[in-house]
Length: 476
Image 1 (tube, rainbow, N blue to C red):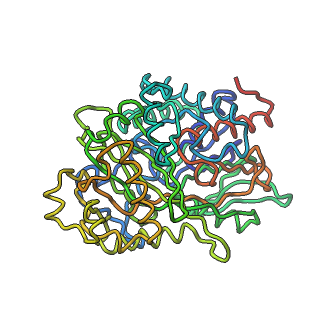
Image 2: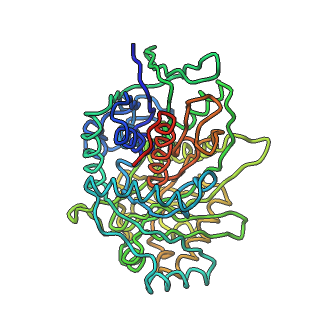
Image 3: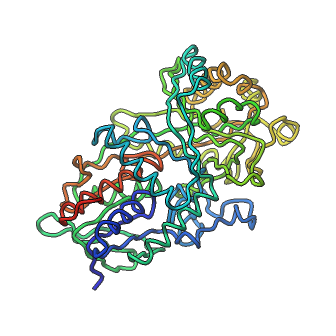
């Protein structure tokens, strides 16, 4: 009989650090960590390996990699192949502040940061209080840009993978891990308490505690399964935008003094924009999100793997009112249109072509001063894809950013589309992240509670400590 004390579904930051905390404080607990993807050593993308040029999943999600996309599934979650920016702040990165005091959130994030340092994270961290940062902040305020400050520990994609491998090695000797395991349902007892989970092969795994930390790729699935069992969900916003790429020299000050400049901007058309996930000397990549190809970016720590370009996202927030309830579906339709126009890829367009109202061509891209790092992107016209308010918002924010980092709104700047962040419906839970089904906890990005590595990891640690309390074990 597959019986455990705790089952964690999803091997992203929430599940990993929850597992780590449980093992550290009660090694006698029998723990199972399951994920739809592969372990850390068998996560491999055929595009990154140079075997193919286009993602094998089509726009309907058919014929993709087995057992799931390695860019978004497996040990480490979506963050495994990310740039590995760990933001040490309670000011952004999710909505934990709706459940916990800011001071406690920061303590949890710093705790996770210490675990990372113990497993090989670099010791360098940015200082957001320098004179140079204040000068950047002042220039931003003058044009309506609010700078969000944070200490940033940049892991780099390859260091991030090594760090995760180190944690994996420590966990594998203390817990059971099952990969290529597609969970399809939960088992609920007569008294509305969790009993376990069921996978796609009909196997049942039993436990009195189940933690769902499925990440953004599992958000729609999670909402569907838990709604079926009577749990309430509420719709979150969705963010739609582009990945911007320019020469490093344009971004010199922000890259040097902030590493990642996070700005918020209010547009004249009533939307809110933000910059997100900046990658100095990085690469634009394609991310497969349940069969939809979206733009993303990452950067390496190894100097030999660096490019001469910086990329970052500009995202426009969309929150819908009644009667529309499918915010993620809206973003999927926008992104899938870009996939159709680019024959399964993403579109790239020069900023000068956007302003002139014309599509980019291969010749214009090849003659451009900014050489694209994503060679698979197809030159095209983002105006045929992005709604008017979204496109206008992106243009306004780029023009504002040009006052902070002159040249970013230059004609050679490249915009890749579509980039989208699919936030899950918020799963109703108490302030300890336990749902109305006793013993069933939800956390991380997939539950609509966090948005990024730091808060997702902190969320997992907190849930583990709550379970330890119920088991009579206090954390160190």
